[in-house]
Image (cartoon, rainbow, N blue to C red; front, side):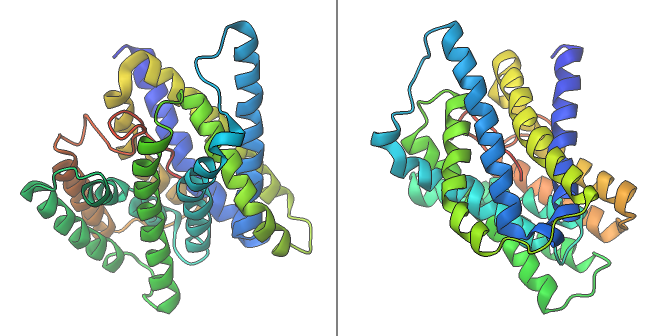
Length: 310
């Protein structure tokens, strides 16, 4: 890759990793549902505006056909945004930014398992051992964290892992049902579908007080920087270096998430957490069948797309 591509890949990992920081700052004041509704709605509208401008410049390659495909878009929005985003926000009420980011890196493990059960992809012995190693890595990660393990922390960890399972299921479903859409259209459909799902929960749980200026700044950064701008960087990389190299951002996100948590929130990063992260990365390498520095999995379609972390 050219230097500009390495720089873009690093920037993408940094701003996707920062999304965990922005969520942590904002969720206590806005609540999980309201926070994520604003995020997906505004980001979806920004991408819709971009798609409109692009369609005026040239004939679009595909149309969304909302009336025909709305059920599919709702399912993709539910599995790839509404549920996992809300679960991660809920988890960050109890666990640190770094722990949430590292737990999210288990997504490729769940993707491989769901693909094997749903798409009949072969679940080889290497993938099975990788999945087992992933469980061990999560145990080491949580056990090595500085948090006192109580019921709230256990529920938060379970929510983070459930979010990763949702991403895996959403990836497989999207590959089967809307894989033919260009990434910009697919992302827009996903985000707006998620907004439709989150509208009622957000209205029922809307905060009674206005959020602080700090929370509003973090919300704006989460929506514009870590969602809309992140997709634009992703599209640039996908077009110029291909899906395999673009997918290596999977391994940068938890690293940057941990860095931001340590820098801005003074979160400790223990040796046990580093060991757990290393074990999880190794398990992901086994499951994906390649070395960690060359490929990640959160793909769309299943063989060609990286998906947003949080």
